[in-house]
Image (tube, rainbow, N blue to C red; front, side, top):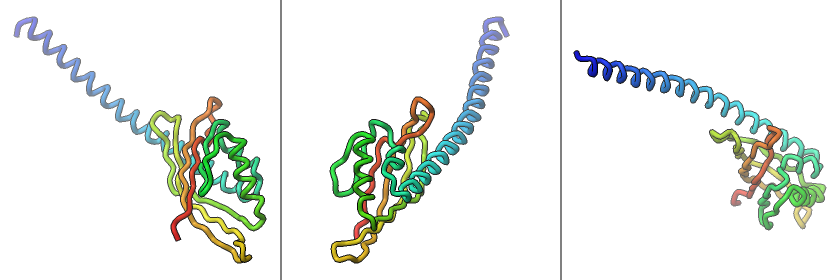
Length: 166
């Protein structure tokens, strides 16, 4: 084998070895990334469950603290609102009705590969006294988009919920 052929073979072997090493490390990195995303998704699910517990206190300010300053909330049968203050007003109106308990349960949470956005989705239950004095129970679903803030915390940026059909 002449020197040029030998050099080409060595170069080819180095390139193939480089692909194997890079490919191997990217497989490990993707496993670590998946574990990190699962951990972050668990953080979001826990945060969402904490938010539901805050709603049980009927404290609109405490509930609104889970929103980003520039959030959007999409309550059912009402116009969307922009900003934490407006979202707090939506919750204050809900809590003004003394018979209204609300709770939700996260069924799924996921974080994007970037680690900067995630979502939670689940179901909610609420009850309210109707005009005739009888309790009306509503079951529904929600989808919330979360964004990682500059301080590393997560805040809700888009929050939408609506009732299941009856």
